[in-house]
Image (cartoon, rainbow, N blue to C red; front, side):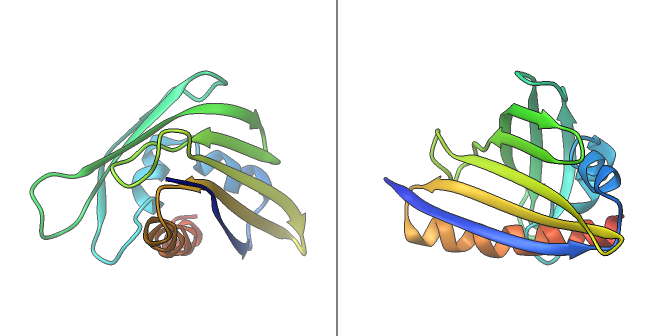
Length: 142
């Protein structure tokens, strides 16, 4: 396992920081945008949006019967500014964390997603592609 591997993905979204932030804590919205690949769906999303609360998302590819569980614990919730949570999936290591930093800019929001600690370079690269597509999907869902 390689603790020093990390990634950063940024995107400007033409929506207020509050709206962008709230989407990450709304299970209905999570089902719409947490899709890391073409044709993928999120048939299940649930959460307890408080520090110490947990979330669970099932991501499903079109050609498989069962989905992949992704879950974690909310570590920091600072509305419209920062969201930090653990990230546990079949392709991550246990101490993996994701941080979302939101900055108002030009009538919208600059969102920077940082994901730290991956078991391999391949896992890191795959997650970078997945998070990039998720941020694109977020804009469409909003």
